[in-house]
Length: 144
Image (cartoon, rainbow, N blue to C red; front, side):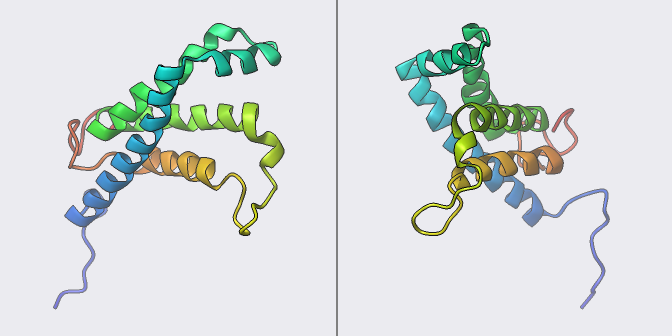
């Protein structure tokens, strides 16, 4: 049995399957938040932005971060760029809504922001790893 590792330039089918799982789960879970905002409107986000002296119209950016980017992640198209958009979206969400909870633990001992943290760092992982071969953009697609 050979103990040689695969070349660094490519990835194995199981690594690409892992990238697929990460991309699709991240995309679907964030897309559900985006769908809720499509149904309910961006009023909450616009109000927060106005409270911090930012233009409320920036609230429409939530649709890019929670609808467009997740759809691109699910498809595996421009996955690195889409993941970076999700990272920015999560940083803004943490900054505007969750900053007071950043150092807190919940009743069961977990981090109060564990969901936001998983979205943020999962998206960062996709941005670093790329989409893999099981994607519309393919293994060597631009920004994939």
